[in-house]
Image 1 (cartoon, helix red, strand yellow):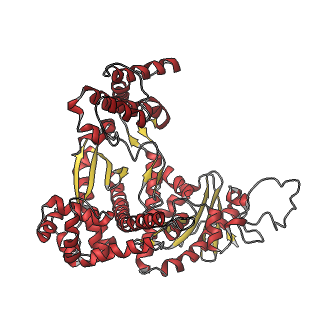
Image 2 (cartoon, one colour):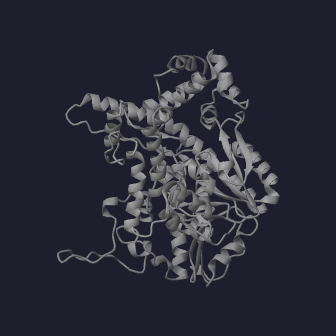
Length: 571
């Protein structure tokens, strides 16, 4: 039976199920207790219960995190059922209905859907339509679609169902090789998803006038009409055509036609990738014109006026952030936030009275390899600012060769300039190399691999028809490379997210806001007068996160930290 009273005996850190409906109320669940609280401002109640060291709020999925982020609530501890499900089962998306079905051993083929019956369909016995669970065990689609928010009593029941699913997730986490570590990962991944909700809500500071000027310089003025847009596009193309002798038109947006065009001009190239053309830029005006065209075309089509109109408002670029890309679990974002080209970085500018504290983890993959493998020789190499120099000395090769060899070992590269150093790696760092090879072999056998934090990385099987041996061998090799890389990339993502949520927690007290998480880089928007304090905090958080995350306490992690006004100022 649910009570309408606000609980007064919540214990800091205890798990409490939460379901919120703005304007209606909230439901709470703890053990067998339920609270159904009517309120026009339920988030203020959540805020009061979170004050100090609040409970670990548990919710179904990102929709609740978005509400928490939108209200600016200082929630640090949480458990996101859908996020933990992705950790356990792999993949980058799921639904409440799917999570419930899988955790209750129900077939996804029988998931109920909303909609009218067809003329030939027989009505099924759906049981009591006011109950959330149908007779067949599935969640009622009306509840999943929002019916849970119709009353505080339903909210309380919905929170209780989320709590029930967590109780089923815990044994699965406990079956992993390191149960305590897996639970910690569930906590940090949930908090990282809340950080993603905050970045989606808050956005990245953008200098709109500078953005408009950069776009105009590269791609021309804002089109007044479709006809004007076509004219600008034609003028952009003409700058390339003018370099052809004799002059002719070609579809510059078709790589095959561009390659043929270059061949006619005497450039026999395997492809038209920018790095290859860049080497020839100073030898031929056509190449320079083509590369200039590409820059302008990318801005015009991807980061142009439409991009600003659709994604920039109030001086902030907003896109949807996700805490897991579905492979090894790295953060991703839409609206260009996660692949903003370097030429656009000058428009990312701190607001008046603020600066950015920019921090980039150094040599993160080999340091993570040392941490998850426990290889003592590689751990010793992490003690310096530059890990590759001691490795090079051990192998008796140049530093650049050692770097290529270490990265190649993690990415599955076996040819090229560093191939000869791989034997030295196996001899001098046998534990680390054995871990990578074990993961690769599992991938080749179509066995899922797990990161050190417990994330499942799914492998795929290649249908090879009637014995297509070459295709099968190629697919197995690809899985092997993918598995060994995912093992390290996934662990690195887990460490990065622990670092990010540590910075987030400490930064709140001084008004610092994380506005970008790019691979191994953080951008923290900070009041200018507190810049040095925040920079020191960000640097210290590297060690704090390592103490929480690293399986090996002797591994040293490093970061380059600087204070800048524009993202492009970072070196």
